[in-house]
Each structure stands twice: as structure tokens, then as C-alpha cells.
Length: 105
Image (cartoon, rainbow, N blue to C red; front, side, top):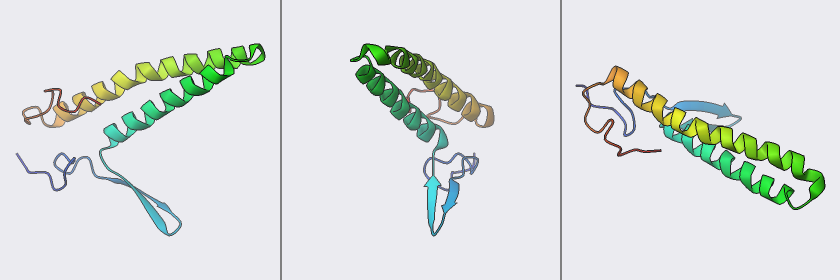
């Protein structure tokens, strides 16, 4: 087995994603964990805004849709975890630490 060059990388297959924004660079490492965090933030936002919209009868319809969107994103969470595990196992079936629940995000 080859040792990863950076923490969070698996034999270089999970290289950081670099986006250039003017004179700045946005570096995204550990993509699956990053996607999971963004998904969790969106879930919280949908439910928080939806909760406030329920205070007024005129915005109840929009609030209901935000709750539906938040619920769909809650289904996306295990799909992200599943994709990460399948991806890592496909390329590194015998790598220690994969599938032991140590990175459950």
C-alpha cells in the first residue's frame, strides 16, 4: 500500500479542489466531509427559515416547502456517507480505518 501524501488523501486520489477567486484561492480538502458539512448547514437553514415562516398564516405554504426541502436533504446525508465509503472501498478495499465508523459524517 502506498502512503498518502497529505492527511485526508487516499493515495492522491482525493486531491484538493482549488478554485481561483480573483487574487485568492479557495482550497477544498476532504470533499466528502466538506459536502456533508455544507449539506448539514443547508438543512439547518431550511428548517430555521421554515420555522419562522410558520408564524404567519400567509407564509405557511412556503414554510411547508422549506421543510420538504430540508427533509430531502436529510435523505442526502446518508447518501453522501454511502458514496464516500463505496468510493474508498472500491480503490482501497484493505485499507485500515475504512468502514470502522471512525469518520461518520
